[in-house]
Image 1 (spheres, rainbow, N blue to C red):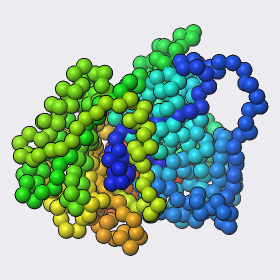
Image 2 (cartoon, rainbow, N blue to C red):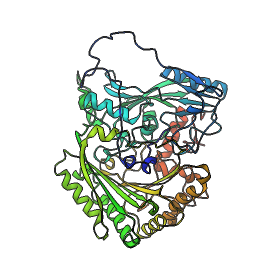
Image 3 (cartoon, rainbow, N blue to C red):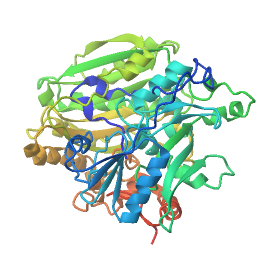
Image 4 (tube, one colour):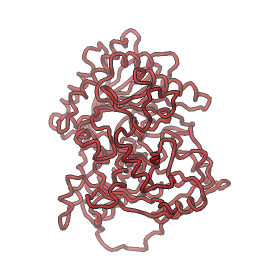
Length: 551
């Protein structure tokens, strides 16, 4: 149940960049579909299972995910290394009546894998193979593989990639099922637009655990289970043990007698041109008018440059609006350097964002190999040895914030209750994401052009209340006219399940009358409930924002 991580932004600007990784594990020469020859020695024994319980010296190290606000105390952490081991772990939990939690990369914003009721925590981090599966004619990714691992393997072996997220340590498991996105999504769509199939360990009505394969093939009797994993979110239907990835445009190629794997996913750029721009917080210059003009410029560019098929979709940008205590705020822009006039597109974009602000900007640009940019160790780095605690909230944007919302954002970025680790991101989106029908996948928000992420990051438990209050109040005030949450309408379009926020289910913070599941899933929710009823009728897989069984 891991989500894309944007929490590293305070610690390193690279935490803002979209990247993704797909690593290791494919045998054979570049571009080959199968291994080059027979094994040269004995195959290593499959990892696990390793059952770790209180008192074991490994136990404390296995409790924490990326967000140290949440630490569970399960009876057992079961580290697994195969689908069969997952089936057995789930069967054991059902037999013993133990609540189960599933973790791959550990980057969940909430306590979905640390709930006190969880007695068996299933750790998928060692289930991390990546490679080409000639039998499925698709690339296989296991849930414990980090995005960095995924990117490396796909690129080194075949020169291809997927439009997934920008933090290389995030696990593929939760990221993909929640409808992951990243720096190539404006160009190639959501990552689930390239999802061909899934292997899922489910529990039948009689309590029997088993592995099921579901694909997007029209005649697949399990197709509804595939659809639910194209944005339905982790921890809802079962335990994903494999993903298969192949672009729909490549289905014809896959039917060939000997398909070329290099044609089954989007090609990775050779190099990335990256510009980093910074503005200084200066009371004499960064007035409300100046800052709101800059934000509005960023947003209106995306309103008019995010149509499917537009050449501008090669450009990806994140505006990082740090609280004034940080001293500066910044913007990162990336583009495939092989795109015609790439440097001109970046320069024109930066100029547009700064026009009419009267602000001086600092920064520059450089070109670097694509794999270096996407998997550099500092990209999304979790940070240091101190306790990391954070709260994230999010919302989709169809267009720019209103003038009143912009004024609210400026007020909170300059108030006395915030600190250098408080702020928000506005992330470029849209483009080819908008080319897909809202019902074709479980990602319902297709007519959007940006994502907004509100955050606060801190170290000590004693600072929880102040930091939680700052980000919650910013979010509530930005959406004051719609009950404190981004109700779908002219400007907003709900929120993103990979940035889960339990406040949306709390009437103290959501006074809109619109339920949390509508904010996340819109009209797709009833269909997700039907899938839940078929594949998890006992509600084995659940958390604070899980799909509910229909009444």
